[in-house]
Length: 402
Ligand SMILES: [Zn+2]
Image (cartoon, rainbow, N blue to C red; front, top):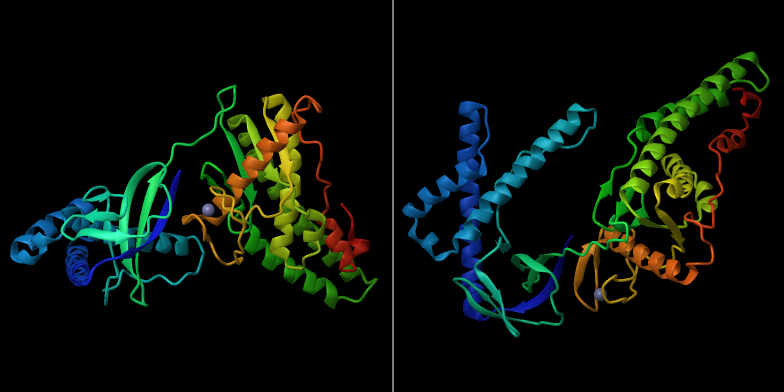
C-alpha cells in the first residue's frame, strides 16, 4: 500500500538557488527529450521507451557538463515523467476510440518545472534535516515518524515560494484472518464503484451514461403522449424495457462482484449508507448507483456464509473525515480527492482512507458482537428500493407491465 508524508522544508538561500537551477536544467532536458521523441515518432511511428530516453540523457550530459552536477536518478526521473505523459496521452486517445470524448493533448513543452524527484536513492533522512545528493542537508520540520519502506522523495517549490518535501512509502500492512485470506474495508463511491482498504479500486459500471440518455429520452416521449392514449401505453412499455435492461446489467455486475469479494476475503466491512434517502436524489446516475449499492451489500451478506466470510456493516459517520493513522477528524470537501492530515501530515487517497476507517470500525464491531450473533452475515440487511418506483413516481403507473 502506498502513502505519502509531506513536510515543510527550509532550504538555505544557496540551496534554493541550486535547486532552482537544477529545476531549470531538468525542464530544458524534458523539452529536449520531447523534441527528440517527436522526431523519432515522425520517422518511425514509434515512441521512445524509457531506455531510449536514458541513452539521450547520457549524450546530453556529455555535451552539457552542468548536468554532471545533478544526481543521475533525478535526471532519469525526467524521462520517467515524459514517459508518463506519453502513456497518459495514449490512454486518453484509446478512451476516445471507445466513444468517450475527452480533450486529448499531446505532451507539451514545459515553461518551468517546480519539483525534483529522487526515485529511490540520492537522499537520506536525518532527524532535523534531509540529505539530498548534490544539494546538501536541507532543514525540514520533522513532525512525524515515517512508517514503512521509503520509495521516493520529491522536493517542491510552491507558487508562493514555499518548499515542501514529499516522501512516499510502501507499507505491507495487509491484515490476515485465521483462514489466511485478508480482511478488507470497502468504501462505496460515485467516482469509483468501490475502494478497498488494500488499495484495490473497482471501476464503476459502464452502462450509466448511455442508458441515462435513453432513459431521459423515453421519459420525455412518455410525457408528450396524452394520458390514457394507446400511444402513451406503447411508449411506457418501451420505457420499462430500458429499465429492465439496466436492472439486468446491474444485477449481473453486483452478483459477480459480491461473489468475487466473499471468495477473496475472510472479512469485509462496509458502510451502511442511508440508501433510502439517497434514492430520493433526482440525479439518475446517482440513484442507479444507490440502488445497486443496496443490492450489492445484500448479495454480500447472503453469499458470505457459504464462502466462509464475515460481513459487517458500520455506520458511515466520519469515515471520510477521520485520519486513519492518527484519528484526527477534519473537514474534507467532496471534490477533494486527497486527505491531507493537518495533524500527522499523512497524505492519502480519500476513498482509501475511508475504507481503512471502515475496516477498523468493522473489526471493532466484530470484536464486541462476536459470539452473540453467530452468523456470518451482518444483522442489518439493507432494504431494497426498486428502480421501478421511480417510473411510478413519474406518473406512468399504467405501464407497469412486464
Ligand atoms: Zn493524521
